[in-house]
Image (cartoon, rainbow, N blue to C red):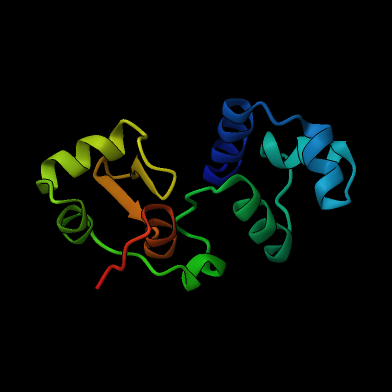
Length: 127
């Protein structure tokens, strides 16, 4: 199973999004979604980008997400006036919709923070 399939499957389960519901949003068959979800097929890059946006997936290898302006943990911590370690703990606890954590294939922690969504959610300006 691919990393994309794993993330898609886990996020659909976590959000209670059915295969049929996502298929309707994408105008595809439920069988197609099931194949993407279980790694039997991969969507086109365009469809993958739509799935990533609908499910807010943190698929680090997807070039279509490159337009997302990201910031580092230290910068986000400064905005919230907390330590970088506290920021990392809150991201690991899935506190923020605009920040995600995962462990990459080499076992390192990865923190992903969407600057624009952070600004919008908190009503602040990140410099």
